[in-house]
Image (cartoon, rainbow, N blue to C red; front, top):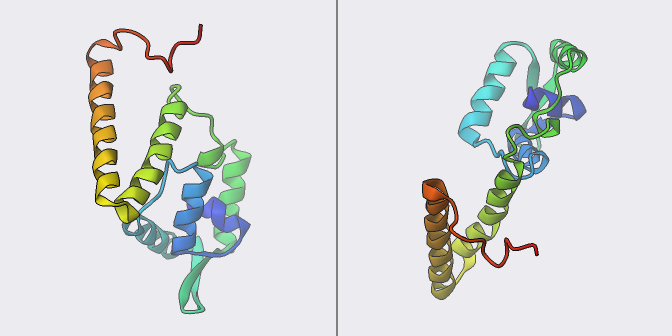
Amino acid sequence: MAVLTLLAERPMHGYELITVLEDRSGGRWKPSPGAIYPALGKLEHRGLITSTEHDSKRQYELTDAGRTVVTEFGQSGGGAPWDEPELGGHGDLRRAIAELVGPARQIGRFGTITQTEAAATVIKDATSRLYKILADGPSEPTPDESHD
C-alpha cells in the first residue's frame, strides 16, 4: 500500500520510490532494489500500475484499478505507513538508530583510517552498553540521563 499511496501522488521510477519511502519514514524504512522491483512487477501483473520508459528510466503510475484500491484503503481508515503512530513506544529508539546510521555510513565511505577506527570503537562501546541494558539495566544514570 505504501507504493500505491506514493504513486497516487504522481508517477515515479523505482529508485525514486525507494528514496521517498526512506524520507517519509524518517529513515526507518529503505526498501532495497531487490524488494521494490519485484513488488512493482507484482503490482503491474495485478493491473494496479503500469510502467513506461521515460528518459531511459522505467516510470510507474497507477491504473484506474490502482486508484480504486488506494481510495478504498483510505476510506476504510487505512493510512500510509509513515503516518501511523509508533506502536509499542519504540519510535525514539528507531529514530536514534536511523540518526546513527547516517554519519556511520559517511565515515565508512569518506573517513580517514583514524576516523573509521574511532567510529568503530564508539559503535562497539554502544553495542556493549546496549547488551548491558538487556542483561540487567543500567547500574546508574549516565550524566546525560540525569535530569535533576
